[in-house]
Length: 402
Image 1 (spheres, rainbow, N blue to C red):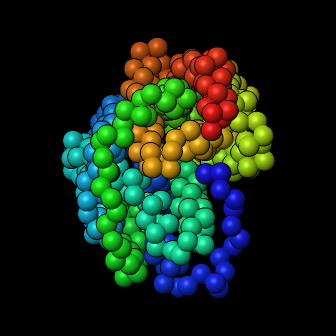
Image 2: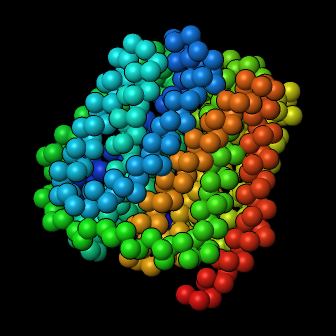
C-alpha cells in the first residue's frame, strides 16, 4: 500500500503481461462491486420477498461471515493448486453465483447464491496480489500491485451507486445479471491470457503463533473489527435510512451514495500526503472522523445538505482508515508472514461487516432505523479510544524495533 505509485502504463510493459493484469484488475473491481450491490438495493430485495430491511440484511451478514470463515483455510488450499486453475475456478464460481442470485425464486436460495459468491471472494483476495506480481517482470511489480488496488478502490467508490442505479433502471435481478456479464469478460481474459505459473510454497500453519505475539498487529486487528462493525451498523442500512429518515427521493439517495464513494478519493489523497509522516495520528484521526460522521448522521438529517456532509466525512475517513490499517499490517509483519496477516485482516474485516449488519438490524427492529448512526458511532468511538490509548503507542514501539 505504501509503494510509490508508478507512471501510467507504458509501451515497455509487454502485452503478454498487461493483458492478464487487466483481467485481474477487472476481477478485483467486480468482486468488490458484487459485495456492495445488495446494500444499495436492500429495500427492493426485501420487498420482493416480503421481508423487513433487517431480515434482508441478514444476507449481508452471512456473506461477510462466510468470507471471514473461508479466507484462511481457502488460502491454504489455493497454495497447493496451480495459479491459473485456481483463478479461473474462482471467476467461474463467481459468475455462477451471480446467475443464481439473479434467478433465485426464494430468499433462502438467494442467500445460498450469495454464499457461492462469498467463497469466490475469500479465495480471490488471498491470491490476487501475489498472482498480479507474478504475471509481470520484477521491474513492473509496483505497477501490478497498484492496478489491483485501483480495481478495489474504484469498486469502493462506485460499486454501490452503480449497483443501485442498475437496480433502479432494470430491477435488482438484472443488476446481478450485469455483474455476471462483466465477470464473463474477466473470466475470458484470464482463460486466454493468464500464464501457466508454477505453484509456490504451500502455506504452513506454523506461521500463525508469531502473528499472535505481535501486539501491534493484534491491536490493528481489534481496531479493524471495531471499525468495520461501527461502519456497517449504519452502512448496511444507509439506503433505507436516507429514504425513511432523511426523506430523500431516489435520485438524491443515489447522489448521496455517489458522494460517499467519491469522498474516498480524498481519503486516498490524504493517505498519500500525510500518512508516512504522521502514521499513528493519521490512523486515530481517521477513526475519529468515522465516529463524528456516524454520530452526526441523524441530527443533521433535518438540514438538506446534512446527509451529504456526513457522507463526505464518513467516506473520506473510512477509506483513509482502511488503507492506513492495511499499510500498517504489512509494515508490522515480516515479508513471509504478510500474506497470512492480510488474509486474517480480510477475514476479521468481514467479521466486523457481519456484526455491524446484525447490530444494525437489531436497531432497526427495536428502537428504530433513525438510531443506526448513533449506535455505529458508539462502536467506532471505542475504536478511536483504542487507537489513541493502545494501538498508537504499540505501533510506535514496533517502528522503533524495525
